[in-house]
Length: 150
Length: 150
DNA sequence: GTAGATGCAAAATGTTTGCTCTAAT
DNA sequence: ATTAGAGCAAACATTTTGCATCTAC
Image 1: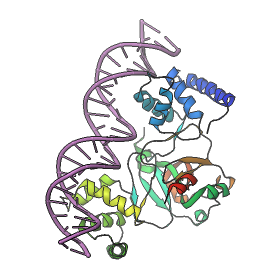
Image 2: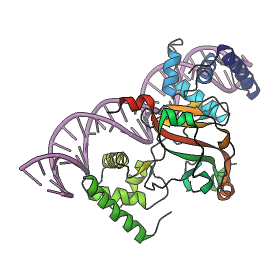
Image 3: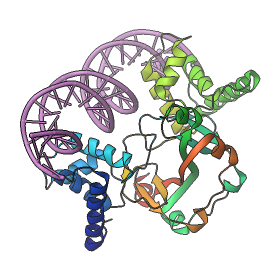
Image 4: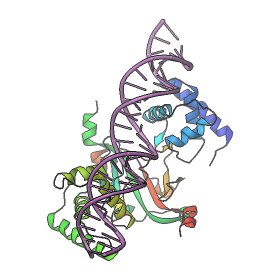
């Protein structure tokens, strides 16, 4: 899904200002990457962004996409949808439950809460999707990782 | 965190029965893998399970762990915590929102719902973790993927 | 005995790193 | 002019696949 042209231009302009404030360089690669990401609600992967930009910017390198997305994420300009993307994680507990994830060490703890047992799932979701279940994922930094930070 | 010995033995026994019902072979590798997973709330990765089992079952192969976990998951004996583990996915939309994930094609759509804006996050979580945010992830199968299925 | 499961090796996929050169400031 | 950033190549990590052998049934 593509968003309106003016809206995207506005977002790119504030992105450029944000970069200047943050003291990072505004390069054509960075603009292209941000534009591509802010122009969609698709949550693309690094490779999808790369392939898309390559069509009009054939010299851009995949490494640049990786490094740029990492930079943007660290500065809070974008977010990672799936912070546990490193490796598959398994669970033998099939009871409905929720997850507390440390964004630093990637530790996952379970939690249970009755008030989260019957969330109000929007109708559109149920119309378009065959519902299999849902989980609440709380992101945070665990005690040990907070201690280690300077 | 390790669970009680009797509890784990009970779970392994019902796992064995479940395998028989499902018509899949009960092998020592499968028992070891299931036992390792049901004995913890850690949500280990494939490699973590491999390294743990290797200490007492040195000949087991990493490929077996991969294939076995896949089999278990397809049969509904275990679940994958992070179905989007294949590749990092990015989002330029920093507004709090939630995700609808197709477990087949891995498409992610956004959804917004006011009733999910202020969930009751358990106190223990807030004590141990520096809270950064939370998202509800709805898992399902999208219309297109349902059509394609036989 | 047979189908399904395992193990090994190799390939495929996604990500990170070292280094040199380039370009934004 | 300076220094962060880009691009290339190579390394690294995770996952998948092909094939021969083995084992639970």
